[in-house]
Image (cartoon, rainbow over all chains, first blue to last red; front, top):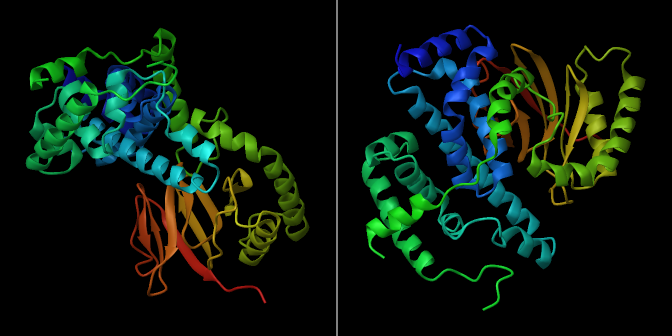
Length: 183
Length: 199
């Protein structure tokens, strides 16, 4: 039995209302979803939470899976949209917190010292450009597949990838000073 | 840096691995979480990391207010079953007075009565809205203000009154308007009304 057939069998069982039938699907796709969540959030703890929520959402929306695409593509679509939604909420929270103190603001926007230089550069990209890079570079998808997941045209993906690459080149050529490092 | 160099630089950057225990644990943790969030859920017993700060800071205040609400509700009902919008609105107003500018909503469901407070007193006073949301796992009743977000299946959904006076509920799971109240929404039945200010 191929992967797609196995997925389908587990989906059918899950649709009967048995959440434990979803377990093998989580086991199969958890690493890919976790990588995507980490690349989008830059935090291991947030990636843990986000990845879990992606699977919960997928289970709850399983009846909407039309089998027109692979389950992994459908799952990625949920993951990307959850990540973008999460980032929008984070942004909203940060804006609310701006009325607190300058120190609070500095603490929330300071680069995470645990992040690598590459991850720090990724986090400086606008969320949709970041998603385009994560899908095409880290997941190895074509622009057409990424477009399907992101719900936009292939041209839009190509444009986002182009803009993101240009910015990443600049950022990685001239990295900003890392906290704790002396010049 | 040419495109190939950039691509290999990005690919060579390895993401931190959470560890074997994490990968073993998650597949069984997800079904448990699914059961908890089948419908309107309470907070996680173990809250997500990014909520810890918020929960700690408001825990003491929430405890006092919950005690206050419970006492108030106990005085008003012997059983919580029959809908009593006015009593919920009274609760909402009195908790609002205790925490000016911080009360997002109060909700009553099978787990009892709870509230959700903002970290800071940044909320602007808006018309009050009552919502009753029913799904396969039961009903939840909310009182909130227009412009606030309530949690449906653990996801924030904005509740607001539009320019025609219709109540809108918008979020990742539900998109509903009181202008078309009978349109089924992802298995949920929703009733809503704007609450008149108390005299």
